[in-house]
Amino acid sequence: HPTTLLPYSERIKLHTNPTAKKILEIMDRKKTNLAVSVDVNTASEALEVIRRVGSSVCMVKTHVDIFEDFTESFVEELVKLSKELDFVIFEDRKFADIGNTVSLQYSSGIHKIANWADLTNAHSVPGPGIIAGLSKIGEPLGRGLLLLAEMSSKGSLAVDGYTEETFKMAQEAGRSFVIGFIAQNRIDKSDLIKDGEDYLIMSPGVGLGAKGDSLGQQYRTPRECIIDSGSDVIIVGRGIYGIKGGEQAVKDEAERYRIEGWKAYEERISK
Ligand code: S5P
Image (tube, rainbow, N blue to C red; front, top):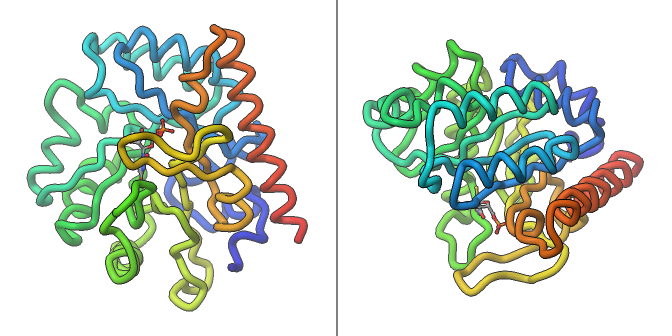
């Protein structure tokens, strides 16, 4: 695949969306393709994890609807840390409704996601109206959207034709707002991709220890994602924040994944 041989720095100019550019710039500057998912119960715990791992990551991924203590001040602190530690904020909201509903969910409610999240994601199952509804809110703010084209979990229905149609839906919407995919593979196949097009492929289900969990999650190593499958960003949750041994252990584990991910990327572009 043409994209997998290009350094992140050379892909910046292939994008117009400010969030896509920012992600690639940070990856290049900080030498990291690691995103940490902070799926802990409270906003205060999440901020602690972020302070420890922030310097190792290009992106922090949140599920703010998990927090029992969500407030506006969490958002303020998160945005402050994203500037100090130089990372992009990705709210993993997985929108899945009609355009009108998602535009309200994205802009309103308690969380007001569009106000602070650089990046969010959506399922393609409702059709292109979901992109239109979200882009109406997010595009004027310079936000980016990923479509879920595949999932890491066992038995996922997002395979084959669904994955391919998802790619085509993104391609038709244009890259001013849709900047890539959550996927397990380079789903922007070389025979589908047009000249000058570039998408960011971000892969969850990454772990250096366990092979999965009891609820269907499946893990691959950073190497498998980046070299074998051509992913651009690895997303790690429990493998990092769940490590035993206290604050320093979490920090060290994030560095370990950053180094693994970066080594694999350097090997990939040197092929
Ligand atoms: O296919 C997917 C898509 C996502 S965004 N599989 C996933 O696991 N995710 C998310 O990645 C999931 O919601 C969770 O926040 C994270 C994986 O967490 P981990 O603890 O299993 O690494």
